[in-house]
Amino acid sequence: MELTQADNETPANTLATVLMGAAAGAVGVWALDRIDWFMWNREPQETRDRTVAARPGGEPPAQALVSKVEGATGRHLDDDRHELVSDVVHYAIGIGPAIGYALLRDKLPGRGLARGAAYGAALFVAQDELLNTVTGLGGKPTDYPWTAHARGIVAHTVYGVATELTLNLFEAAAQRLAGRGSDGDRF
Image (cartoon, rainbow, N blue to C red; front, side, top):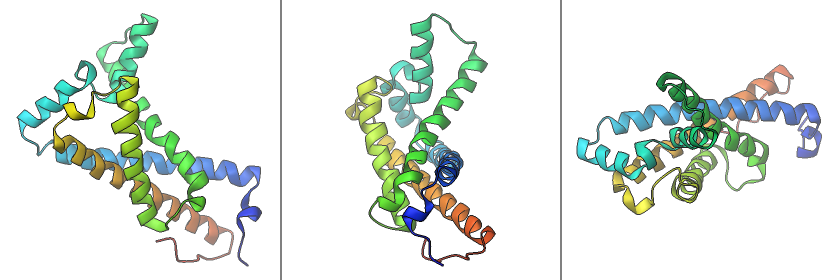
């Protein structure tokens, strides 16, 4: 029996999709970080220095957001807590959009991993190139070396693919648990 989109739109299924989206987003952020750090560690020091110099306060966006909140509230965290809270914010910045993606992805063009790659690339443009600049969490795109943009698009594409792949795995497991098998066309 094939389920239609309308058959799946129950509060329980929506909650399950939100939870799967959150988990998939966390996996996506983890994958993004692995490839981003791999590439960062292979860039020349001069390029890394230019990237850090372009960032507000020399901090990546999540840390810059935590610093802004600290400044606005007058409550400053010690370095270890600042780093921990920044990591939580970094994951939240990736988990939030992944929840939206999980809820909407069947209405988006494309299928499978290609759709995930497009999602990751679009998120890079929207978040890193636009929102970070507008909100002051990042410098102007022209201030960064071209390799920072290349690293960002690659890392966010990996994020999108990892998010999509994780959602596909969750859905396949849920279908098997429900005794419906798998349609096999997600990958």
